[in-house]
Image (cartoon, rainbow, N blue to C red; front, side, top):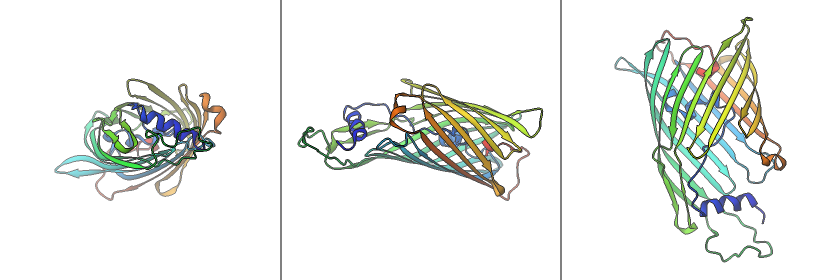
Length: 312
């Protein structure tokens, strides 16, 4: 069999397992709007962000994930709002998931910072494109539960989130796949479901005695109630432009991160995951690249100033 991972994926689908994890990003502290619609418009700039992740390099049919998001503030009828979009594509073996969503956040000043309450509405697509090598016939080519053709199904997706940030602190709670859309593949004898996920994200900038350096710890908790994932991150930033750090996914991977903020609002980050799970002997780690570009709107700005790359 040429694609053992693909067989495993389809076996899970055909058994009607109803749990699906959202794609992982090690640089999650820089991609908050991907998880939380309440973060839309959280800076007085238009921000565009793209991420590419090649997980478990060297393992056949391993996950490859790409993401794009854009968000901006909007002032209307004397109120501040945030709007944005998210696109996500996640490919694992012959299973491909695509999600497009538009998000809105109502933003209000609260204490030293701003509070955003947001929702996202979108369309999710799942597709199967099986490719088999029947080999010496160990697998029964005539088995009706092994698909010979592909399939593609669509569903409605919804999310909610609350996000609060100041100059040096942020915290947010959110849920994805609120409506838990089901996908039925009648010809493939398979059914899947987008399980609701819950997120808690928080981070704080700590200014050191030397004003050229600051520490940026953050944490993200992801759960679908059945399983929990905790990501602990710490970055050291120099001169508000260069940073490096480590991240630990409890029971999953140890990550090294580096990045730089270039001129004209362009940020580039890279991370490498060293696997700590039993998959270690089957792959050479995971690679992730994030690029973000923020630019001024040319409209009246609010009094708050953001000097952290995490709040853009």
